[in-house]
Image (tube, rainbow, N blue to C red; front, side):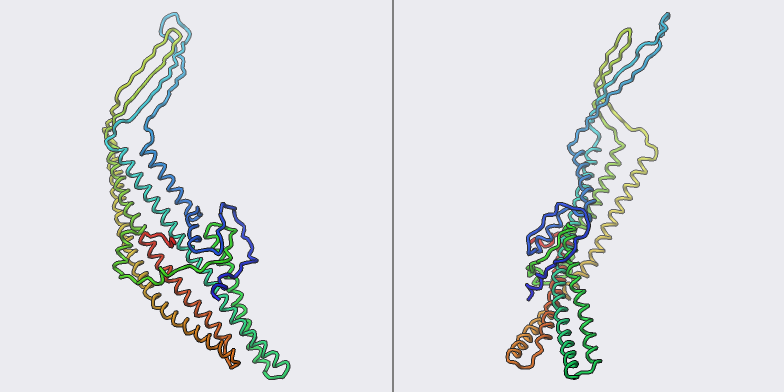
Length: 428
């Protein structure tokens, strides 16, 4: 029954307008591990983070290995009056100059800037990775929503069918034998109409949940039809950990905490850059000049060391340094804020997992009871004795839906914990 329910076709769903992309349609039945793998693809939700990472990488590579040689040519076309007597015409006094500068020592400014760029690159990478893991978790949740929508449709379709059969039987008996009052028939028809409406809502939710899953996977056109029931024993059979153990794992490895600490490091590098920026520097300088006049020419070239020693910068240095110190304090305050938030999140997560474990045990007992009740009802039906086999089947589906919902919620809770402690969501 479960395998049939998750294979409900989504035929008839209309394609929504959107831009085409290079989406590669996965094989079906669609597996959960394949669905979450599409979180690696470029998605509007994290495209700006990927561009930030590319920019940070380009900046780092430039500082790490880029050439610092600077060269320019200065051309000055001009004419000038001669100072000699009896010369009334101006002469060509143009010149061209080649200037080449190569820094050889800046007292650690370049090194500090490269360290700052490297930390910025690590931060950008953390943002991209965390966004990807969040998308994996979101795709997993939507995958489960599709499976639950299929089960919910089965439950409501069964209840609608039972309501229609009762209503139709009463209506026929009233028309043929006047066995029932019209008000009783109308009461049963009202129940049937309500359950028909609920069934239609469930059918629409099947289509909508599939469309959302395809969009989360990165396509506006792909609609998954057949989903494979995932293997979740690594989550639903996992023992609840002590809160303190969970907290230590999260505080040590979570993307938020790692990023916050990197931001402190980045602010410290920024302070170093400020302090190094106002230090002396030594450059090798090459200069060659071509100067042409109508009465003669003069060529000159020079090479040597250029020492640049800042003598005064007004209040700029103290202002920049104070600003950098404030940035460090803000980054350190952010670490404390992240730690506080994580403690609260882990506590709530520990509570959720603990309660879901209890709920799952109860749901499994109810499911076993409904399975055995269904077996007894089927046996009585085969013996042509009175049996509520229709109601029994509807309640069996309901207990299966409740069990799967708890299993999925427990899996999502454990997956969120894995994400918070830096472990990829549902690798296999």
